[in-house]
Amino acid sequence: MATELGAGSRGRSDSAATRAYEYVKQRLLDGRFAGGALLSENEIAHELGLSRTPVRQAFVVLQGEELLDLYPRRGAVVRPISPSEAEEILEARLLIETHCAVRVCAYGARVALELEPSLERQEAALPDDALEFSAADREFHHTIVAANGNSFLTRQYDALRERQQRITATAVSRDPALIEEFLIGHRAIAAAIEEGDRELVAQWISAHIESTRKLTRRRPI
Image (cartoon, rainbow, N blue to C red; front, top):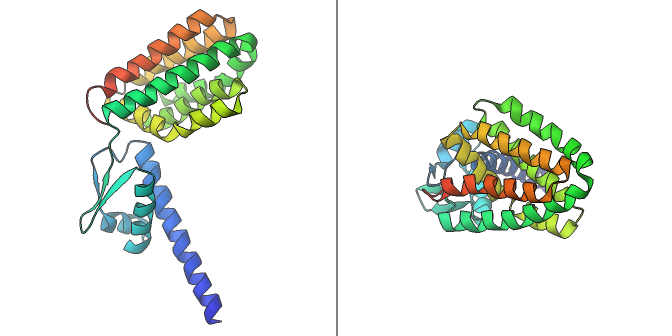
């Protein structure tokens, strides 16, 4: 019985830590916890109705994922994405997305149809739902990369996913007008793919990523 009780206790502890982890991580990725922000164990524990222990456990995991920096007796600070790191991420995106978008022009009508649901979600996010838009934005770009059919490239691209989402969410939260600008770019990319215009799709992807790059050069995310 004691063993069963112990196992149940550990299960509840793990469940609480998972809940705290998912709560904090979602807010890190969608920009609600911005780079440089100080997170309090006490405040988050109170918001979730938990003790401090599972929150502390979640913070440790997120530190291992390079999303937080822990400071004894102070809490955790959200690790910013520096301009140099953002530049590297955007360069990797440009290379992978351009390659894949050019390739999928060969079967553009099918890919354009697959892109439509994420475009509709983006449209619904107008004028200023940054959280919904950043999720739909990620879906849009992933669809293009995955449509190329190269599982290795898709895995490499997905490895950048969390930092990409932070960059997009922070950019549009700073300037909600970007939602409409990004949507225009996305529709142009989808149209170029549907038409099979490889040169045009490459130009639009380059312009689209450059818009984000200009924002990240101003200050850390």
